[in-house]
Every structure is written in structure tokens, then in C-alpha cells.
Length: 265
Ligand SMILES: [Zn+2]
Image (cartoon, rainbow, N blue to C red; front, side, top):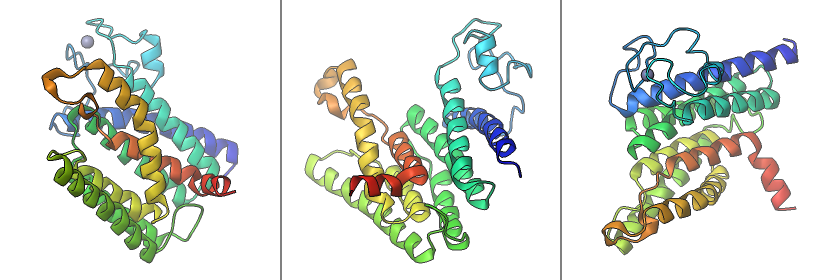
């Protein structure tokens, strides 16, 4: 396939998958069904969206970021999700070309995007998504031939899953012992089980490091916004860690080894 055509199709698929992820995240976060109602609707007034309002990104821009019926603001995370998905699909297309690896990368990016949106709204990473995701990650690692960061083989997948899932489980256990409260959720451990199975043991410390680095400014901002209500320390103001881990893992998928080479000289 012509590379420019493939890039164009990837961008369009990224837009559509971003729109799907927004909708799926919104519905699953509320315990709703993925498929009913079949048509998208405005969460504020219930108005069913026309096909024109439903076009990713363009629909948002054409309406000036508001619902045409009730004029309620459309949350900025919808167009941002669509942009992030498009950027990832394009980058994966440029990196992997038209391969199964590209297909797997895009599939996992969409899953991690949905998980991030659910975590942002509910502070939960549902087992119903992370555990089958981890199994699929193991299969992809075992079946794909090696190319860049994917197709690491079943041994590296097992080692990565143990390091990611087990490492975070230990951290969560230690935090609870020392501080007497839950700091890290076990959902984060299952997310790292998935990331480790897909990307291998080397990805685990880098994903954690990148996730913590990305979460730091957001955590400080959250701590400033809610100063010591209820007497707790501001930094413990619940901030979901999942979206930052997802960003770290997807960053590793695209450029982890290059970053490591650059960092280690
Ligand atoms: Zn509305």
C-alpha cells in the first residue's frame, strides 16, 4: 500500500477510534451498555446527535464546543481524546507501517484510552477490561514476530507481567502498611500486568518513571485546588494514576528503546 494513503487512513481511523473511546469510556464509567442506545446523545439534554454533530473533531469545532440544543459546553476531553488517538495512530503507522504490529498497537492504545477515561471519572480500572487486555497482550507478544517494541516473545511477556503486576502490587502493599491507607489501587497493578506482558520487563521501570513524572504537575495542581479539606494531606487528594501510566506505556511503545539509548548515551 502507498505509504501516504496508509497514513491518511490511519489518521481517519484514529479520529473514529478516539470518538469511540470517548463514548465507550463515558458509558462504561456509568455502568451502562456499550451498544445501547445505538446513537450518541448529548449527556446534558439527551438530544440524539445527527451524523454531522457526530463527526469527530469537526462536529465539535462547527458547533463552537456547545450542544446545538441546550447550549451546554461539550467537555474538552472529547476533542482532546480524538486528537490523542489520531496522533498515536499516525505515529504508530509511521513506525510500524501496514503490519499486524500497527494493528495491535492501535488496538491497545484504544483500550488504554478507554481505561484512562474511566479512571478519570470513577477512580477505577475495571478488571473486565484490564485482565482480558493482559491476556491479549500476552498472546500478541507470543505470536507476533519481533518488530521495534512489539513481538517480544512469551518469556519476556511473562517476565514483564510479573515485574509490572507484582512490582506494583508490592508497592501498594508497602504503602498500605506504612501509611495505613490505600495509595495505589490494585487496578494500577493489573494495568502494569498488561503493559509488562505487551512491552516486556524493560518497559516497566520506564513506564512507572514517565507516569510519575507526568502525574507530578497534575498532582501538585490538584493539591493546591483542594487545600486540606477534612484534615488530610493535600497530596493524597485522590488523583487517578492510571491515565499517566497509560501515557507512559504508549510513549514506551512508540519510542522507549530510542529514549533508553539516548539516555544511556
Ligand atoms: Zn444538549
